[in-house]
Image (tube, rainbow, N blue to C red; front, side, top):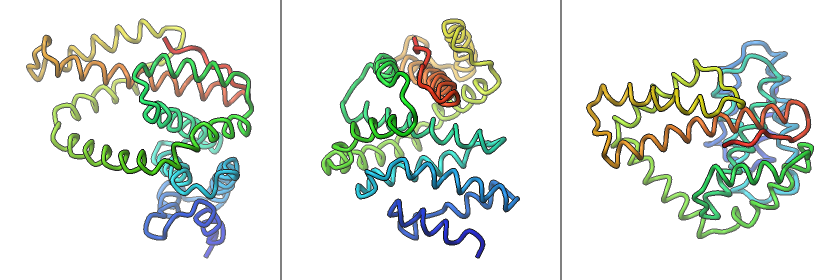
Length: 247
């Protein structure tokens, strides 16, 4: 079949099992043109080769593959959009993994620290540096076992917290309608807080409760991560790495 060898090469390179490899279905459902599919697969191959020195670390390759699938789930307007989103998602996921592994709680400060430390690196050395940072984590079986347990707990928690899901979905939809500008971060936070209070009032949530504060922290983190994505993507598109600090 068309492109079958490329799919096979990607699957073998990333050591993904047949049952877990859904790349062909994802690409087919997102794009109709064979020419576009060929370009997308070319970008995927280029992307995974950035991680060549880590290809024998299977959990790492699983994370790379998950980044590819998550990016294909997004609305992609052009081939260049796909490439930028793919790199951006990888950087953010790996940085988040490092934060979790190192048990760092002040995420905003750490994201700023990491972005500052990656100043002016090209994509290949950038990924190598991040990979070397993450390599011990992906080889730490105790951490990987704990991570799987945490994900299972989070899945159960999400199923139980239907109200939180509804509120965060509404916030996410609202954020998609906003012009996210790194130069107006404080204004965006004020607008988000106002929108959050407007939504939360419909559900009669006590504003003095721990639940209200917890959910507020989570929706503010949603904004922070989106701003971080914009900062990283703007830098990547210019092939330099000069993120605007996230406050």
